[in-house]
Image (cartoon, rainbow, N blue to C red; front, side):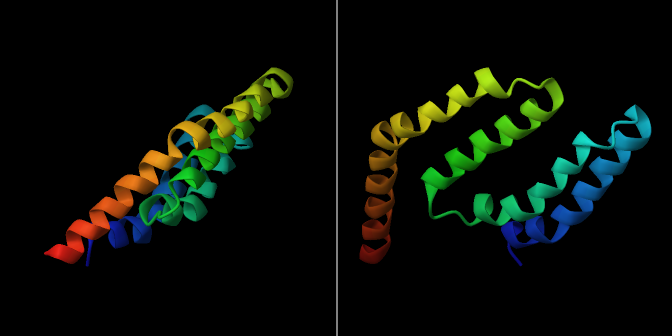
Amino acid sequence: MSFRFRLLEVTPMICLIIYLTIGFTLNIWHPTWIIFSLIFIMPILVYSRFRSIIYILFLISIYIPLGIIFSIWHPLWIIFLTIPIYLTLVSPYISRNKNRIEVIEERN
């Protein structure tokens, strides 16, 4: 089995260990439950063919915990303004490199 598949298999157990460790040591149970969202995010990160979605999920994973913990929802929404910039500047290069890799693999 590949490393990626094994990583996906152990993600729920890792999330549970992190959740219980933070909960019992720091007594922070409520915002720590967000760690379980890794179970759903890991397949996207590990087997991603959609690199632009990773950036959007990264922003959401920053926005929600910081908004819940520090209650800074209003000024933090500005990070979502970087999505069009990212899609305009970075995304074309990622898709171009992906196509180049596929062409090289076909030649071999």
